Every structure is written in C-alpha cells, then in structure tokens.
Amino acid sequence: MSGYVLGTRARGEGHRLHVHESLGSTNTEALARFRDGEAGPLWVVARRQEAGRGRRGNSWLSEPGNLTASLLWPVDDVEPGQVPTLGFVAGLALVSALAAAGVTGCRLKWPNDVLASGAKLAGLLLEAESRPGGRRAVVMGFGVNVAATPQGLPYRATCLRQMQYDTRAEDLFVHLTDGIVDAARLWACGYGFARIRERWIADAAGIGAPVSVRMGDTSVQGIFETIDEAGRLVVRSEDGTRRTVTAGEVHLGTAATAA
Figure (cartoon, rainbow, N blue to C red):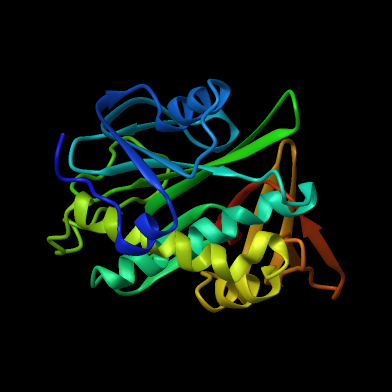
C-alpha cells in the first residue's frame, strides 16, 4: 500500500492517512470513521473506487491511476453558515496542488469542478454530518482524472495523461494535502472567506460570460457576474437584474446558450 504519503505541512498539522486498495466510496469510509469516533483531520485514499458519489446523487467511478481521496475535517468550532464555504477551500487547494505539480491552465467551475481547456478534469463533493454531543464534521471528497478519462459522460472530460502530463496520483496527493493546510489557514474557520472568495474568483471559469443554471424544471440564464459573500452564484439578466443561485446544473459559455 506504499506510495501515498502526506505532505510536510499536513503532517505538521497532525493529519493522518489511511490508504485502501479498493473502496466503494472514500467519502462513505471517512463518514463511517467519524461515526465510530474519529475526529480528524484524516485522509482516506483508494486506488480504485467502485461506488463513488457526485453531486445530486450522480455516480463517480475512479479507475486505477486516478486520484480518489477524502478528507475528514472537524467543524465543531465553525459557524454552521460557514461550513459550505469549505467547498471553495477544497477547490483552491486542488488548483494549487495541480499548479505545484506543474499542471497549468486549470480553472474552477462553480460550484465543484475543475476544468482544463473547458473539459472536466476533477470533481469535488462536500458532505457534512453531526453526531450526538455536538460533534460535527465535513468530508471533502476529491476525484481527479490523472491516468484515465471516464467514458460515456454527458459532458467533455479529460485527464492529465491525455493533456501530456506524466504526474502520478501519488505526487499530486502530496501537494493536495499541503494545499489544504494553506487554504484552511487562509479560510480561518470561515472568518477569512473573503480572502478565499477573492482567490477563487481569480481562478474561476466563465466570469463575464453567458451562464445557464438548471434547477429542476426551471432555469436561470444570463451573465456569470461573480460569487457573493456566501459563495452563491450571481447571474445578471439582460435587463440588469441579478439573481443569486445556491445550487444547480451549470452550463458555461456556448453550452449556456444551447442549454
């Protein structure tokens, strides 16, 4: 099971690591550890994930050579309203890790994807849970297409190997564990979200371009203006009115006009 190790800063902050040959879902395993009394920060990594989950219940199968990792993070001292902003912390940490591994040109797609030349390279999944006694934790799940691109998807996807990078999942993971430490310090239990937001916007895909957000049977179309102080998507319509979106299926650029 050797190969995956924590970065220097992650080890210094007391992070720990469990590596598995195969799991149904690293997020599910991390949540199970929390229910059994684990406090975190704990990384759970699987070389192969058989029953991963994406947002809105979508499945996520990870092939060998790709990175599948989840971080159990305690949030007992975090205001509940600030907990969802950890998704932006995770996104910034992943883009930082990719840059540290020499991968350039990656952009963050609201709320939970990383794009490379408009194709999906990685996805994030944030799940929160509370237990009796006031214990609360979040699991940040990361799925990065390193060696293989998933097939049969309804959108464009890519992987680092297809992009001509020889980065290994193990190498990227080291950078990710240190990147989380750096981003979490900036976030400061939510009190520093303004700084996280500023950096996230600088790395965002599609700002100033057409966007369409599908929410069930309805959709919002306009220009992706920014994200607000709570991390919500701000869409400006043709008449200048603005609408904030908390969740939905997002299409950017030409895909927005066709949605």
